[in-house]
Image (cartoon, rainbow, N blue to C red; front, side, top):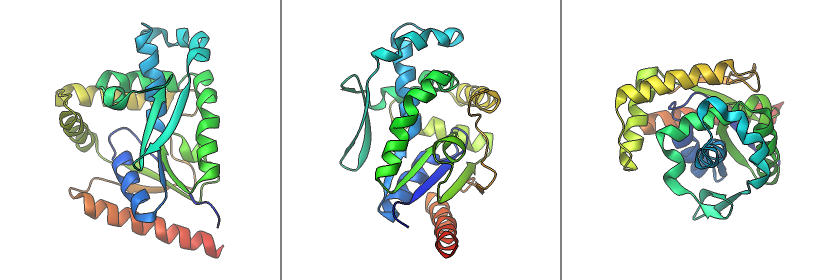
Length: 228
């Protein structure tokens, strides 16, 4: 096996990013946060005054977007037209914009080559909504990560608070449920598990416990893959 490809899919707040980063570090491979790419496009859309109910207005402007992924101190940084947006793409409103732009076929095509190119050149763990179904359909391991709505909302509130962006639990929960439905029901690359994905319930209270359990699942799957 040359380059390893691990696909992690699942809804917002299930712990995809934090677990994927930790798995990447433990395995010595690259973590690719695909959601950051869509958040970056969503950030651009909002900066141009595009509203959530008129996302198609973004399509004619895609030619004005240049996105570059750089790895600085082992951290993925996404640059929009030469500017590192940092945590600005993590604002709660940008989550809804990310979901909106991800339903646009032209946006998905725009970002597809970037994601595939990274995976073809490196051993990666990549997380998102359609990694195992669209981006890396031949990934060595596919995981569909879930957790209860309440657990996911609490985690998201905590994450935003730590970034200095406090928001209410009720607001996050409502937005999360709305985004789940939007992601599942979209016509283009709906957020559903690949038929051969391993389902992993990340409702663990302790992060280390969840990480060790997921690492075990991935390592067992890779061993089976190498024997086949």
